[in-house]
Image 1 (cartoon, rainbow, N blue to C red):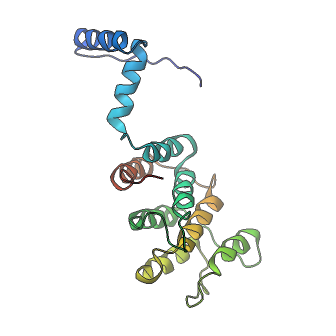
Image 2: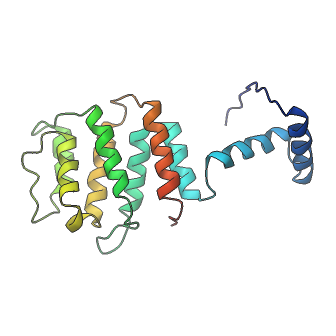
Image 3: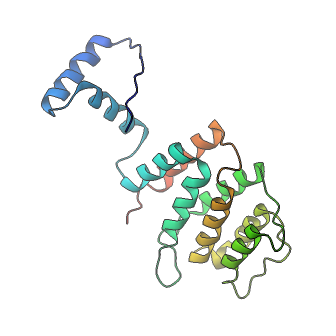
Length: 190
């Protein structure tokens, strides 16, 4: 991992120096590691899965982090998701996808890939869905009957995989998604 330098100005420098020196000595580490841990622990939780989602968000972007979340959640058994409390992520996906939607053109690679995931729903038609947001609207409108199906997460993962690198994340999107991860996945564990 690359090391970087950053200059901070503190109002309570003497107090911070004394605390970090004590903690570094006590934990047999360097003071910058103490400061880094303190900062990260104030922004994140101790939940390792939540930390991984947030790391992915800031390393690879919104679509990549959401893809990871949906892939993990699709790993349930008997066609049921691992964590059923993910509706807010689907709503967030709709919001971000709608800001920069892509048309799905029949017989193109993206269309075929996405619709190969959708074919698992026997009694739900995605005909007429010409944009990613149309597919998500259809999912949300049928949430009570399909929300716990792993197919929903596979579809959502495919949407975000297909969108990766095609739109610029905003600060607002990253902050909202980080907050969602911290609120909704803190009790998730594999």
